[in-house]
Length: 382
Image (tube, rainbow, N blue to C red; front, top):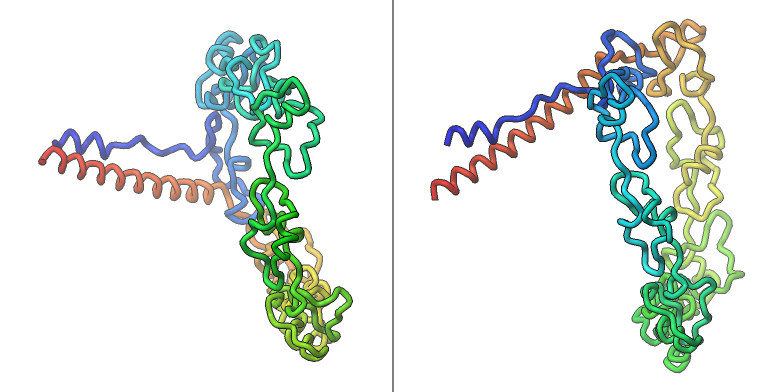
């Protein structure tokens, strides 16, 4: 039993912080581009030229440089590289083409990109099959109450147009089968709906609502296109299902909403509201100012803050820190550097971040194995 516990809780050591085929840099004081989030393998790792991932070399025809082998030691000769770093490509004869297509005639001598043919290889390996519905170009025109059905792409075409239509076309659904209409709309009369067809065998609101439904002129959605809300307001689609009323005043009260105001908009760090913000209304048909419009119409750069001025070059291993956009910079360039710049993170931080993540993953793995151990003990005991 003790052996079972040891086997289940033992795990491989997690020491690598760099991608396969790369090593940690030895000088951990090397700076990254900015804060700790900017530290990455690009700045904190170097290629290991003894591994496949640390070099590049062309493979022989029919093979590819395999990223799964980046951590493998390649050897010393060109033949070693080929043997240790390259993998044979799959041939197109192993691919499954999409419906309506067939393998090209040279499929047995044409290669996919990797050891297994994937969807991305279909253009290389497959061509239209003009004996299948999905391979016909152009497609036939189905009768008015039918549509060319992509689900039948693998069906065989017929000897005549009529036989091909029978094989490749499917009956459209009638508008009478649409069960509901958008808010503020109503189903067409039964006679009209039965004579109208949806785009496919199932009616959907998104595709067929405009054809199968009429706007309800008693609702906000049914107001004429020339209807105008008062200044500073917009016709609110969220109110489409509301009763519009009969008078112009009722329609405006029931169907219109005030546009967003700069007075309630929050400017980004390093910016402040314009002097006229309390009386400025945004133009878009929204109850809140959008970010794009709000930033332009409601806000202006605060030239007393780091985020409101043009960045200057920081000294040495420092960077202009966007996190300090709302900090007042002072008066001189020296003040700007002191208040707006931050020392760049070093690769020592990258080590800590990756090792912390690895430690957490290791602990999770250990917990999982302990649970398995408990189940194993329970199974043996029973």
